[in-house]
Length: 230
Image (cartoon, rainbow, N blue to C red; front, side, top):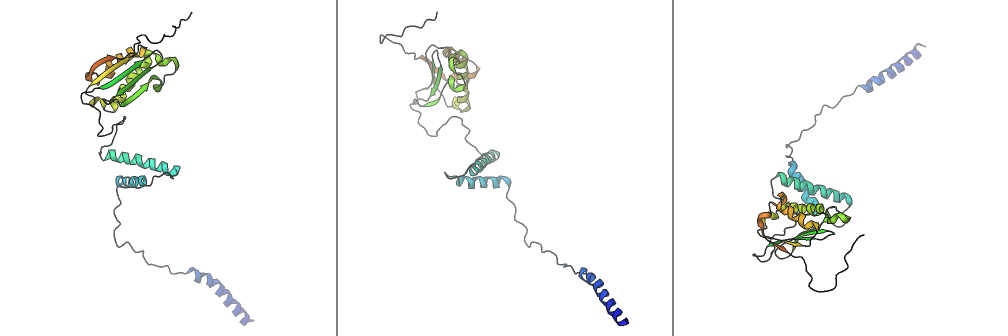
C-alpha cells in the first residue's frame, strides 16, 4: 500500500510539473540587422509625375482600354500642370496658328466679312491668302429660328468673333484689315456698332478700308413676287 501510494504521488507530481516545464521558454535575443547602406534619395513629386507622363504617353495606341485612356488623360493634365509650374512655355492659342505659314502677299490685308440677310448673319475672318481663320453664324452661338436674323443675334455674334480673335492673339498679327459688308439685314448695323464699340478697340486701329460686297442684279431673271401679308 505505501509503495502504490508513492507511485501515484510521483505520477501526479510529474503531471503537475509538466505544464510548467513547457511554459518556460528561452526567447531569442538576436537583434535585427540594420541596413548597411543608407536608403537612396526619393525623386521629387514633379520629376516622378513628369517621367510617368512621358512613359504613359508613349504607350497610347488604338488598342488601349478606357481605363488606360483615362489614365493617359490624367497624365497629360498632370504634365501640363508641371510644365506651367516649371515656367516652361506651352501653346495656349485658341485658334490654330501653324508656324511658318505663308499668308500671301505682304500688301494684301486681312478681311472681315459680314454677310447679313433677313434670316441670319454670317461673319468670316480670312487671311491675305483667303484662308479662313474663323467662320461662324448666329446659329452657332445658340440662336434658332427667326431669332437668327435679329439685331441682338448679329451683335452677340460679332462680339463673340472678336473675343475669339483677341484670345488667339490675332490682334497682334493683323496689321491691315478690310471690312467687307454684304446684305442689308439687321446684323449689318449690329456688327458695325460692335466694331465701333469697346469690343473692337484692339482691331479698330488696323482697319484700312471698308467696302460693300452686296450683289446687285442688272437685268437677269425676274425676281419673285414680293410677299405681302394681309
